[in-house]
Image 1 (tube, rainbow over the protein chains, first blue to last red):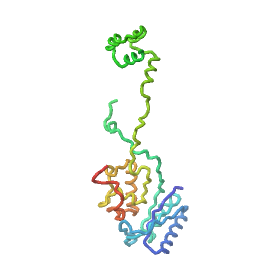
Image 2 (image 1 turned 180 degrees about the vertical axis):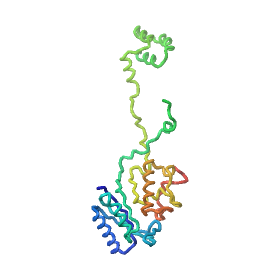
Image 3 (image 1 turned 180 degrees about the horizontal axis):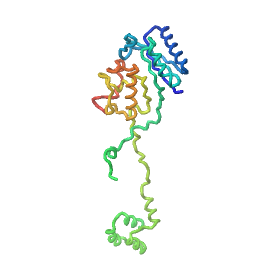
Image 4 (image 1 turned 120 degrees about the vertical axis):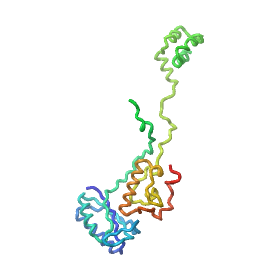
Length: 121
Length: 144
């Protein structure tokens, strides 16, 4: 099962309501056969731009990150489900980023002469 | 003397041989035959090769130049890093000639910034004011 990351932006609400929303979301994920690995709270901050959703304008939001493994079919169904949830401003499913910091050999100098001029064989 | 003679034969042309034959006082008959023919035996070739410099890769070569992000993982989540490559006035992504990044990293940064825009992590038309006083990597007035 591929690993996904759900970047979730929730409406700026009181703590118990936020908790309830998160619980609903994660239960929905698990119903559809996902295994949730981790839930991170990136804090409540002001949004970079005004987002209008569900007939409301939002300027502040709570940022959350859900790390989970699930079947690929989950993405479309969950987007549908989260689209209908009033408390969710912007849900985004991403493939879990593979942090690859392998040997970066540095800038290899390119021989421009060879690149630009075709040598006669 | 023989070694010197053979070296001279290999580096200079036939035309000089006349002078050398005259100059080489201690030359034996065998050497004289060699000079006329203009070839050197295997032993002399090896003796000749020992004197040449040993072939090796330049030991004083500089290590390959690295760009600022070489070895650093680029993620759409660290908005601070991404904001360093964006104009503070318009929020536009700086080009390769200004950031000085290598091809791979420039592409990664560009993709991450656009992703952060869509997801709602990073502002689009301006640079987040809290990151305005970060160390300047890209100076538009003095590119590269």
